[in-house]
Image 1 (cartoon, rainbow, N blue to C red):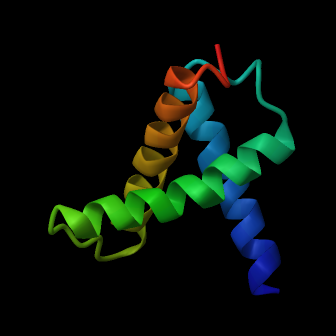
Image 2 (image 1 turned 135 degrees about the horizontal axis):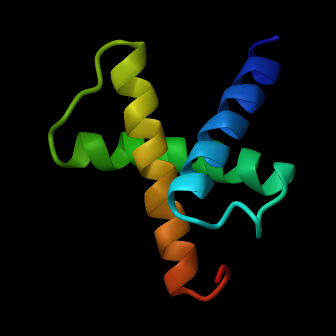
Length: 82
């Protein structure tokens, strides 16, 4: 059950990040889920590296979305996305 919830939340995070980064027309549902899950891990890792901690669900969600946006930015620079 936790895996299903993680995939759904990851999809929402990836979808929101793709809208903000203007890549939503290039990404499908699978890409949104992958970007959301991997971007969430990236965001949490980056926050811990710079000494920030996301306490609470809202802060965790924002860190996850920012991580997904960072992942999309990296993918754009590597020319995987336009």
